[in-house]
Length: 466
Ligand code: PLP
Image (cartoon, rainbow, N blue to C red; front, side, top):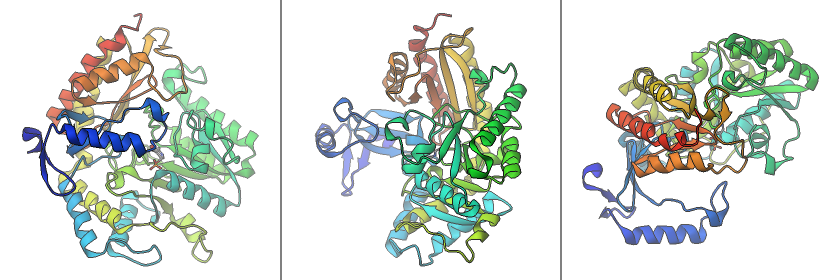
């Protein structure tokens, strides 16, 4: 196998062995010469050329293997080069590579039906997009058209994507340089028991105060001007913030009381990441619109979309929906989506995620937290976790102060470097180390990766005072 022999097949079909310094130099030269990278100062980055991947592992051209503990951008739910997904894409490409959105196609229809089925009662229709940002963009457009209102509320500490409205809804520093974009947006604080904006002393109090604050925001922003509230069911890149019991149900009630559409952004947490088809299903709440992308087909071919409640979908029965994308419901992407459903069902992926999360990850992270003075909080569900690092566990002083650069500060960079030296590719951001491996990771690999994180955290402990 690739893991044993460090051999891979290059795009021309030739078998190559690693290390391959010539290929490494060529990829680096083309990349640094011509690829303009996301979210980066181009002269300050050094992207690692990747030769191949298999399951939870990928290799660089020097033959170094990395366990992918970030699932790329938390999209690679079924791991690298899953044979069922690769085969489905190859078969579809051989049959019919593309077809425009106004026509019907077998895999597009089957995928929409299967998504609506797992979304549950009250959901029948799916609007396909190319990714997560345009899913949110279109969900907001639907809410605006149905309500006849314009304003959309979203949380501080959120990420909703990098198109005009999605970046405006984003409650983190990625929005700042892009302002003003969509001016009809406003922010509120969500619950965050470890760092309460409401000085709460219990989780129950946090829930209640966060809901009172949201209602005040609705009233003061003008309830009759608000089309939608958009919430990541579990906040992802801003901290794996799991909503406390009752919070999302309270949001639902407020939306009903004020005639507001509830959009659940499930781009990162949908499709098994937390052991449910959609994360909201773990919280006993029913949104009006669900946005998805990433895990729907592990990003093998770009795909996202909006699952629409019957109430919203039926608004467009006789009124035209003014929106569309050339690649909406792309057959190659949908074929990979249908294969994803088959793998999830055949291999019991949801059950596996729940089991590994509660039996392996959570106890180990709590054990890590008990031994490392730099670990202040442990949060998560399924295979989606974060360790929040602090300078002082008693005062909860942050390990590094809030910074907007998007670049990890020294203590976190040191943890990330220590992980990479031991063959784990981590997801680190601000004061956090996230654990988000592919859902197909073996138990041995998972334990090995957690061992590495455990050792790597010693680098952060040096900056902690307790
Ligand atoms: N929403 C959430 C919660 C996300 O995490 C992301 C991406 O990380 C997006 C939206 C944007 O998705 P995309 O990058 O596919 O546009």
